[in-house]
Length: 437
Image 1 (cartoon, rainbow, N blue to C red):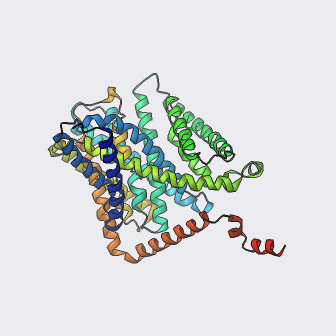
Image 2 (image 1 turned 30 degrees about the vertical axis):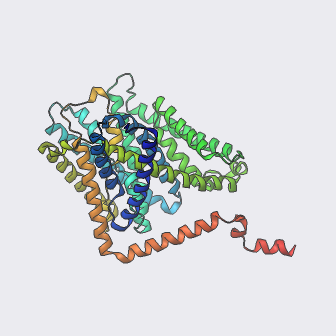
Image 3 (image 1 turned 60 degrees about the horizontal axis):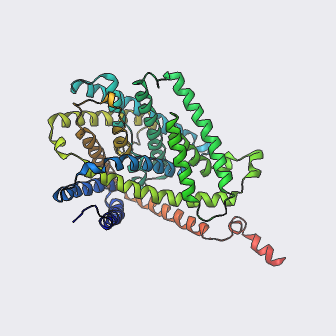
């Protein structure tokens, strides 16, 4: 029997998505990240495939494509959640400070550890290998912090999003330094950044103004296709493409802020708002499916034997200790004494794997064991799980309040989204006035 027949693939993908939905329910009740369960599912599937004589390496090309699409969807999903208000300036700056300093400090310490313990590792290559290990996983964090208080949840959304974007920029900056033809130096890097921001703003305004005029009901996947195209073209032009996705999400989520003065007359707010709500739903759904398939395929491609190496264990433990030592210092500096469970919420995930597979050939070191990657991902996820369970036991009333508040928000959004005339909600007396007329 051909294991990769059309119907077998459809059955496999369908069952995986159903199991992922169940894992999400389990994760909310136990605080065990669904990602861990998906990786374990992938490992089980790896042995099933081997029993049928299939090669797990067949999935490697799919892993990169799923990782890129998943990354775009996750950053867009996070950007759609972010409100830009004057009272949020300090939380944003604090989150950015923790993300930036944490990223650089963790990368430096991890690079020192890798260079010291891996034969043939240069400092330049060590920085490149260390960067993916230092980036927080918004794919794991954002779904996991829904039960925390609003301020803590907001901090984690901002921090993980900034960590993703800054980490990817740092990685490709370091990768560019390996190729003299592409290395534009620090000045060129910041010029590239400014150019990316300008292009992002122009593209965001253009997309919103054009799409609000499209009358077809089938336009959201067209919008996502445009964003994927912009991301891929940006990469070809060596721009920081993820910023394009982030800025578009921020613009459409904060239209009243970005469309002011003369620009406001070109915006049909109700139509644009409808696009925002629909995009929010489809982005979350797509991110869920892509994230599911990515981590299951990652589990299928894992070489478990590499975890048995003493060197892998030593390197991984040292990196884990450095991650939480740096994080403790930064949170105490920026947040004061209330640093739990934030201290333990520092998982590595999708971007760590994606960037590892993007390391250029000229920087590849044979002595580096991919088991370090798996060890750090599983280690940080387990520590986060323990921290969340610990916090849940200590502060059950905070969790209940946050859950109740989230339920009220969802009910309000459902009511608003399913009301035909939004103007009646904003002006309750309007319907009465019409009747009198």
